[in-house]
Amino acid sequence: MKINRHEHAKVLTQQEIQLIFSDGLDNDRNRTLFTVCLFSACRIRECSTLLTQDIYT
Image 1 (cartoon, one colour):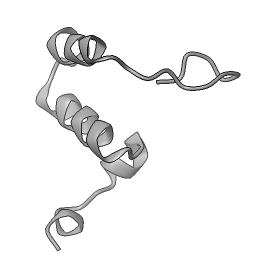
Image 2 (tube, rainbow, N blue to C red):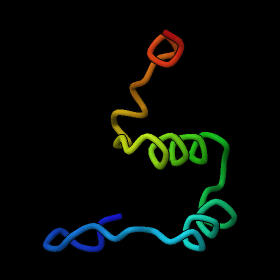
Image 3 (spheres, rainbow, N blue to C red):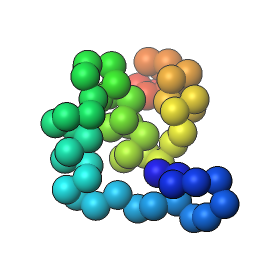
Image 4 (tube, rainbow, N blue to C red):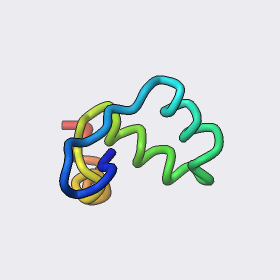
């Protein structure tokens, strides 16, 4: 997670990730996008352009 554009990205703690899931994400689509990005280290744009055949091949 970028804090500002001039320094390194911040690594989220387990508590911060749990807080994002419990309070920050309001629907299943956003939770799914965040989860895929978190566990695959892809960017939002990469994740949002994935197709079913990209996953199940």
